[in-house]
Length: 173
Image (cartoon, rainbow, N blue to C red; front, side, top):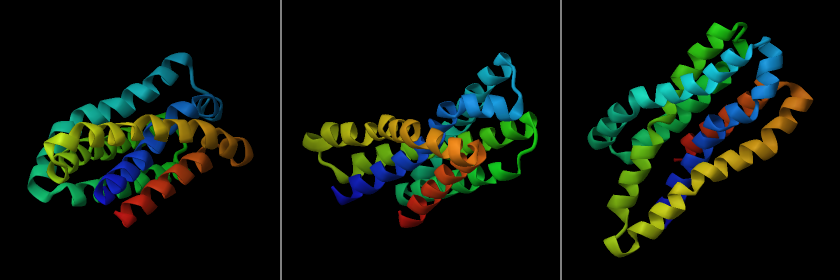
């Protein structure tokens, strides 16, 4: 159950980033002067990065183990998102989001493999349910906290905070 807590926490940290971006779209749109079409690209590019790397992330889990991939994914997600401070254009923002998608892709296969490895068949469904709830939990935390940070300090600061949380969780893993 301790391992489940760790992989769940890591997924919350990554979801804070992945779902924090959509929670901040009004701020990002205003800050970068985006059209509606460009706003639509924001989530598409982020999710596209996940799609491109998901299978490779699964292979990395098979080769390196779930602990290292979860830690690396959470830390890399955090570091890349913290780089948002230096983004000056929409194109640069999209570039960062692709790499955030690449990094966040690692936690799903790694967390699933951890549950499969650490839990007997009789408890696996419950454990997987606990781990899977971390995605909407991270999104809810993002929606409840990041807009307030953005109101006080700007959208870049809000995403920096999300990145810092994910980095700290990755280090903890």
